[in-house]
Image (cartoon, rainbow, N blue to C red; front, side, top):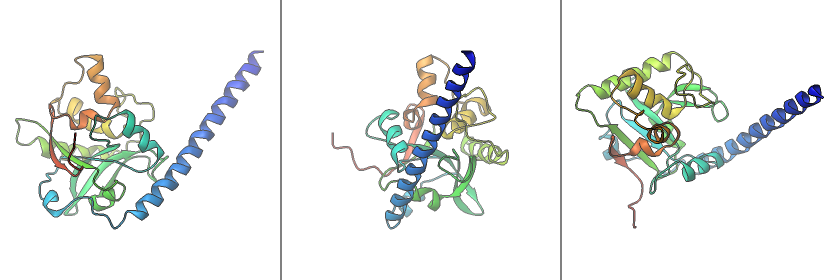
Length: 223
């Protein structure tokens, strides 16, 4: 009897795993199609780029079914961003350090892309760039340096959402790890609700209590 239950559980887990793989396969096809269709669209202007500083955070609204779920359930209107990264300078050009799952990327976990490539995967008029509010003048520099430091460690993507384990990280976890654990400039443990909002939603990444919105390409809110 116990053996039958064991095999049943294994079977269920197998089909769940296959189902997830199939979902992300079709999701990636949707993303590739939309990226190709939107290549001619501008995501950010030269005037907006001139406002950027190294160590700023960039948030984008991606394509695909999974992005749709994040956009709907993990945000605060009018913004519906689904992915975040840290802006750095690489070889004299703007670039983004971020973390993605191998389900949606050729690299699992920490990686770097030049800004123009990163923006290809954003829906037009759906980009935010924010800056952590700090009294220190070198905070942005420290954030960028730490982003590159963690990048060099080839940290894999965190599929379990465990903030206490820094051996793997998802996109917002990287940002929070730097602010909360490395620099100790952001306190997120005051209440369970506050901690959960920081860890498991996108909404705190543009909360003006903590971050200044430097660039907002979203259409004006008519409400």
